[in-house]
Image 1: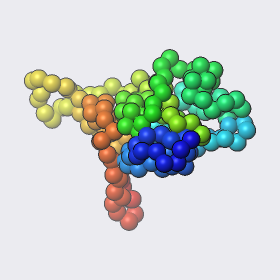
Image 2: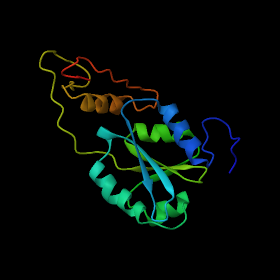
Image 3: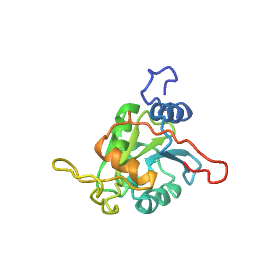
Image 4: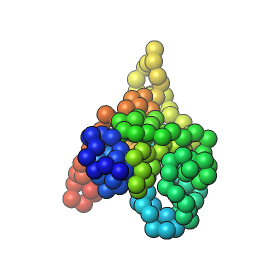
Length: 178
């Protein structure tokens, strides 16, 4: 792999790709997890917490990858290891970011000049109640709640773009409210 690749394109240099993608996304609600395979190679998992089914993610992917000792090739992983209905291979940060923005999880592979996204979308969400303090004649009848994660998932569901950023601010010395 080349260390002199263009910005925003996966190069195969694991540290560069992981830090470059995290910088590209630059949002506080993006979750990231380092996974090591059975032969100690590295994979980095990226997802939005309230947009993916984390139980399915752990069962269908993380445990399988931790015991895997084959080649870290996106094609091989997608056919042999990842037991989900839909996956894509991406060569740029923007393409992977767009996939994550619609509810997929992304996987950056050590030594691979591309990344994987796979469908583990959280389809079981709390029912969104109609806003009782506002009458809406036309348009969606959804309202925000007190949980910032659910609210961000609602926004991300409507605005499926990696350009939507969340920056958390902690207020109060005792309550430490975000």
